[in-house]
Each structure stands twice: as C-alpha cells, then as structure tokens.
Image (cartoon, rainbow, N blue to C red):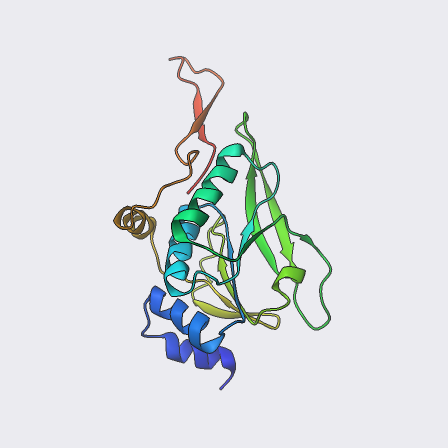
Length: 208
C-alpha cells in the first residue's frame, strides 16, 4: 500500500477537522503546510487548523495589487484565530526542483475600479520544499468535477483538499456558527455601463 492509499484508507471515516488533526498532529507532524487566501472557504480551514495547532505554517497566497481591505482583513483573521506562523507569497517561485512537480495555486486577481480580473498561476516550489504534506486551501477556482479525492499526490507531496465535499451553504453555516467575519469586499459590486432602466450591469468584485 502506498502512503497515499494508506492515508485515504485511514481518512475514509474522518470528518474534516478529524482529517486535519490526523495530518497535522500524527501523520505529518512538523511537515505540514497550509496555503490559503482570504476566501471564506480558506477561513473555514484556517479556523480548524487554529484549533488543532495555531503554530502550523500558513502561506497566504496573494498576487498584487493588495487592497488595503485585504491587508486589514488578513491581520484581523490572524489575530482572531491566533495564528503564530504565517507568511505571504506572491508565487514567483518558478524553478521546479529535480524529481518534483511545479506546485501551483490558481487565483483570480481583481481590479479595484473595474469589473475585469485576470487568472494567474502562483508557483510555490521553494516555500513548499521543507514539507511533505500540502493542505491546499486557496479555493479561488472550483475544483474540476473529476477531482473527487480529498487526498492525492502532487510530485513528492501529499496534497489535501479538505473541503472537497463541502457546499457553499456548508461554508456559510460554518462561518455563521463560529462568528467569523467575511472580507469587507465580499459583497461589493461594480456597476458597469447603463441599461434602458439605468441600472447598469453589476459585477461582483470579490468572490467568496
């Protein structure tokens, strides 16, 4: 049985917090890292991690521009959850290590005063190098329908998608139950152009 198969076997009956505890405290103690954004789904994972071990390494993935609201929100989440080991990475680590994959996060980069956004890859090869288990919790882009396993392999890393079974309602209910704040821009819209009734076309500027 491969390590991935063994972990899948052990984790079959575990809910999300139990799976994360198994990875962080037992299977990959000291060798687990979490990549996160400021999306609500990421905050859910960070809340669970904070209750398991707030010293778990967290890498906030963020491509410029960094809005003032985002910097304030990140600081607030770090304080609320008591996270003690976090960094910010813009994803420019493009050199792939021998015998490994190019480890990437996929993110949308939004404009401040325009409805447009760009899709970008953040390469995280250097910052993930010290670890064996990667909890992949940025959640900017929906997982493809064929990706159904919480535990997978990405090069030499065990890669984990802890919320693959969660719905948007699950995320909202968790945020509400734990009194977790949303990003200030989560519900903002941008009005572009004018229609016959003068309402224009409304675009969300930040998705959760």
